[in-house]
Length: 353
Image (tube, rainbow, N blue to C red):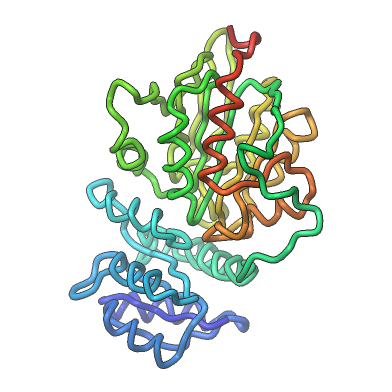
């Protein structure tokens, strides 16, 4: 697998090269000090994955990603940066455009955590190498759904959960801007760096009038419709239930073990453990975190819906669901928004009243 490195710090490029060159299956093809130089290098020697810093002179990581996507280049981008809430708008925009993923570089230079960072980086790059490059006909996938050809869906679930990873922000925006007043509690679980929740929420609902926005939560799940709970980024999460309180418990992710956070599979398992059934919508994602959990809810009677793999920026997550043959619906994000609005406005779940 060919990789390019982009960072204005020669030290950072050296560290990344040393880490990746130790893996026999990863070839560091070139290095560049900014996005302009990276575009030139990639035109001469195309790589599968560019690992780039976000903040650089002349052409930063977001501009590099934008140019790659607008040029219809097959190369993907993993962004490694010191993520801060004040730079959240760039991170969220990179999520929307289709950054393959994000890794914090806070461990670089810290001898305690460098080994963890090394394991996480190599694991991430190898995971990317397993990503399907194009959509293929999946033998067990359902017919592509539209509002017209989708029959009535009946839900017995307590919650509707939308999950995603790389490339999921665009579809998520499209769905949530339509589905602002569902009669089911809605939970959103997408992989993102820590402290990005407020920026993400503001981005998604920027065109929705304030009086039309749902009631937003981060640490609990209300027992009513018209609410959306976003799992916090960069942390492990699980659902807990005590009395009338349905809370989300968070703990720090292990930088060497937990490649993706929030950990969607574990969260979905925690819902079942305390007696809550979820209907799950699976959007674009480079990994398979969340697929096993979604299938477990499907086996217990939940609905399983998936984004059309042909329209997904990253196909591993939706492809795994499509190939399982267990999805009730496969649809574009636009059609999915309409299907969800129709299904979850039909009647209220008596168990939540």
